Length: 264
Length: 242
Image 1 (cartoon, each protein chain N blue to C red):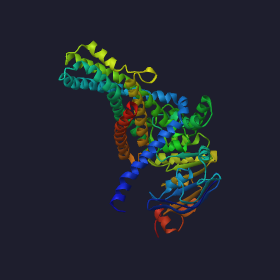
Image 2: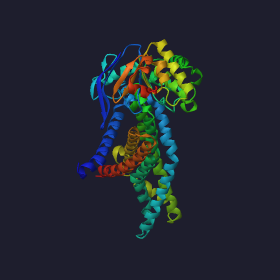
Image 3: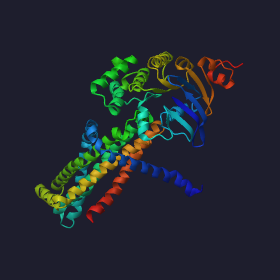
Image 4: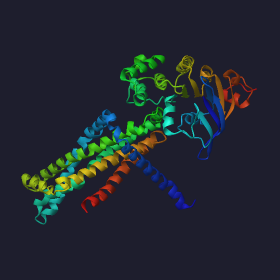
């Protein structure tokens, strides 16, 4: 083998195999959506784990994102005498981009990593093999509740992230930019009044749609990385790292293409 | 009941099984011994359908494991039990739920029938009182017995044991071996056991096979194999070399 073939065998083959495995996991989940009523208890557990336990981090991060946006945009807009538009800019930025992306990144770091570590440990300790040997459908029993839970929880968290982000921006607008809070809020709400699908604000539902897709993607990556873990504790560490890294890369890439798709 | 005919399996450059053949009759207990890393567990994984042979035939209860459909495989596995080397209990489920899991997932039994069955198999391994505990709260020997109860709960016709004595002290190892023998005598199941323990082989086995370099070196009744003149077998089993 020459250098290019060796590099391809070392880096590209595992990457394509991992991608193919991830897609087969996603397809397996979609094919088993009829099993959701059977898994409601596990689904609620997973929603609690991925939703309630991540809530404080999501709110904290997005509150600060809203404040950062207001501060930086406020300084720049004030140079042109347009600081009243900060509510508009913060609302649009939060709802379309920052809240869905930052919420998904927090979920990748906290939930996808936990899924990869948990399933990876089960894999290296032969618990997954034990389920297969007992004729138990691993996708239905372990993967489906995790993926459905995160797909449902991500948009809910994003909605709350929108609210705290805009409030955070409002606090900065009033205390640092000397703007009226009510005026800021009216400005922000006006920015979200552009009607789209079914009369819903387009910015809002585009962000929610994105976060739903991000939630599904992050959960599938977390689960598929865990299921591919090999070679003991270091293998679990590698699968956890891969889950977070791949999730964040895909969130960013998908965010671009989804934004392009929705707004053109 | 089980028949392996000239099977071969290679991982990368390593040939793990090399024309391996043996048969296990109904209710017979075969024990396979061999050096670590020789591929003994690989044999069990072929029998349960987790691996497929590169060549040769594996037949379990009349099913050709190389041509079996996914659905047939699921049905066949319901007739088989597998005791893992490290028990492989699901750590967030209690002892009761671990054993109930295959019954809940693969049968239509009612909750009360499942409870009865779980308590019945727990009593077979003397673990009735441990049913609310979690795997982390019980010892390795107890985990092994729970694993055995889980393997038994679906009334399997074939049981596969992967190093049942692994990680246990000699006393607990002997107890688990005696338990497996008692279950074999009471339930008349066919079994294949992979082990490093001569005592375990003597307690459990009707037939002992010594396995190395992908092949069976020697097989027969355990005492005959232990007293054989086969040089490599005597070396491996720790018998004094003439």
